[in-house]
Image (cartoon, rainbow, N blue to C red; front, side, top):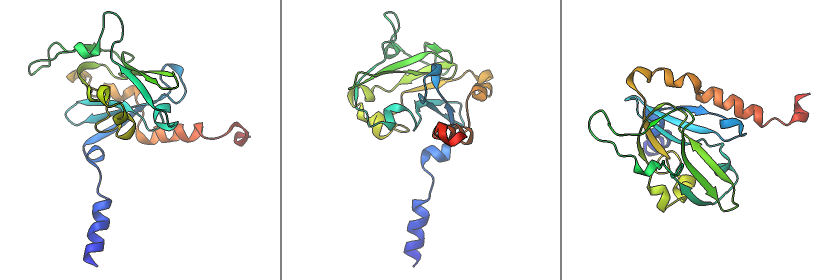
Length: 182
């Protein structure tokens, strides 16, 4: 009997993500419906950018053809190099700075944005080799990038983001058919 109770308690234990990170969301980026992003914010200010569960790439059973961190002819997120305690040399990002472009096998292309202001610490090069990680483990090994907001902005960066509860309300409203509104 004690073994059954301990197994149940272990299965309900929160994941590392749930335990140490706060989830923030940005919905319908650049006016594109359901292109939602998730920002996992650690207590040490570091933010991990990933796709929200509702993003079309994760929802529609799509297969990723390619991921490109080359934003323009002059700007590649792969060339980002940081050094030292203050992370000098990292590219500074604004709220709507593109991080990468993801192309699916059906030729639809999605641009993933930073959603927050801060210094780019790293991009996930593993998803270039294994794009399926983005689909299978978007909150762990399939993250897009890691960003460090400025110390003085670390509290204010979440002003334009949604909490989990606010995000769930928006998603629930999306799922209501127009005929159900009347």
